[in-house]
Image (cartoon, rainbow, N blue to C red):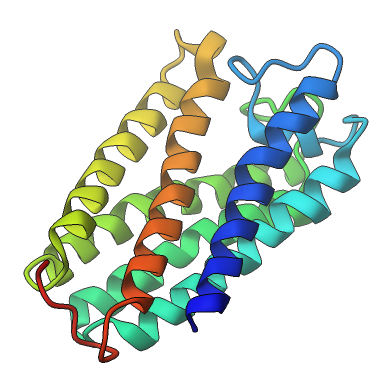
Length: 208
């Protein structure tokens, strides 16, 4: 399972962070600071197929795989289970980006497809923040100090990123704000999954 977790972490970081930045650098007029990640997979984006099927889709599948690992390894309490189910919202957000590519420019409103895209994004961020908070409360007493601190940091950075992204006067940094939220989630998933699989026996995580 350790090898599988390492592969998942590598896939998540490469598909979720490295690939978008590479595609953004090669996309004329695209700014990682000002433009959403979804704009890379928009209907008019030059590398939309690569972004959607080599980036967004692998992210969703990897997140599901990591949640499955955590489901098998973490204490089966109600709060932990609810937290993991809430974190599936992150996968929903990225599956939504594939199934419902945003309109050109990723506007706040537009076609029915754009509305579904926006809804999946809302599910992602609400699910991500709520899931992290539930895990912090439900698992925190038995998790290692490093995991507790990482989870708390992720709650803060994801929340700040979402609030900045939603602020109507901060559209010039909405891309950077989204990256703060999404990349924090990816780093959290990678670190926590790798940390959990190194603990023995499964389901009991002692304090370090």
